[in-house]
Amino acid sequence: YFNAGSLHAYPTLNDKYWYLGGNPDLKPESAITSEAGINILHFFNRVFSTDINMSMYHIKATNWISWQPSASAVWQPINIMKLNNTGAEINVKSGYKKTKILLNYSLTNAINKSESSSAYGKQLPYTPRHNGNIQFIYSKKKLAVIVNPFYTGLRFTDALNSESMSSYLLVNTAMNYMGKWFSLNFRINNLLNTSYQSIQYYAMPGRYFELSLTINNYKK
Image (cartoon, rainbow, N blue to C red; front, side, top):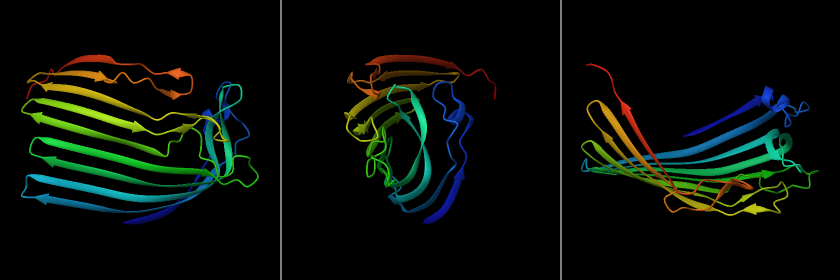
């Protein structure tokens, strides 16, 4: 498949007037977009199935609105005069009897192309080039077990790409039980107790647990 289009968007009220961070001088952003991809679906003896979707995209933008941390550590939106964003995505769904595997990967090259900017040719801050996750699901009758590792690549924290945050791998797990009138869910988040930050200097939680019970109070 192939599709192309254009967009034109005005700054939101938050973009322009958010307390401490708004920028009333923002200009509307515009972009020309294109995407091409292929989808492959295959069954083997009605037991094993695979669905593969691969796509590539290109965005050429003018006055792209991007929230970035300022020198005072306050996040503010700015206009990037020219931006080229090219990338690829792969999504795979496979199933064999009671087991399913879901795989997602994305490659993102969001490059500042403003000739007058000192950040020319640099990746946008907090935009990792590599992202991916895999989800393993095993289900039997009313019970399901899920293991979900996901990877976030290196991210630059400033427009000049002089500082960066390390990549990290997180693993979450869950066990679900569906009863006749209730569902029970137990989760272990950050199973490996990975130390990581989504935003620089803001630590994220280590390993923690969740237990939830949902009552389905309805009559057929």
